Image 1 (spheres, rainbow, N blue to C red):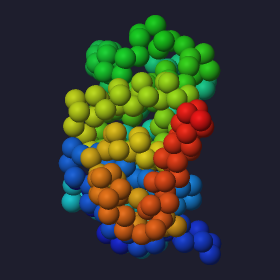
Image 2 (cartoon, one colour):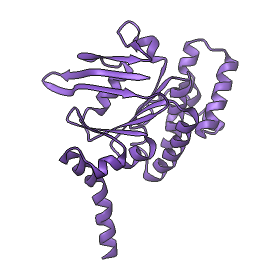
Image 3 (cartoon, rainbow, N blue to C red):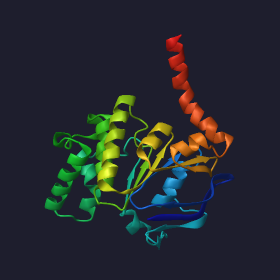
Length: 251
């Protein structure tokens, strides 16, 4: 579905991403995991064509991404950022249907697609006429996901889509996303810093550090066969606070 070959990105003197190669399988979810500044969001922005690599190439279904075709290829990608990225002056419905209206879809076709995706994401119809500032964070993320899925893209790019939500809503949406991924069988690239979220939602985990991939595989592989000391430190950093809290409560 998606192939990256030796792509890299430099910002001034800072190497945001060293030459990196990855293959994303059709219908699978891959999580890009790591600390802030590790290169995971840079990698996603390169895939989306929002920035251009300094070296290497990106292919979607064998077609290389270029400056000439990126606009048309981007219509084959759905993209969700943290907090949704909805336009505050547009209703949820207007945000969700923005690209379809730009492409001159018929009103009937748009209404049918809104109904299908509303059921899929569990966003009740009465919320659609409200503005982003009038709904909860969870409802904004559901609307953002509907917008990303509206054109029925081949690949779905999610940049920490649940990072700004409170823990209860985040767990609920994780479960819903899992159901949606299973139902649609889209190729999904998920950026997160949450190990549990990556393990729950993804078929494969790619852990990055300082612009490089340090390990790729299932959570069990990262736990049992860490490739570097950083892998162990990263896993322990997310596991130990909870364990320390339990020990304090038991004490």
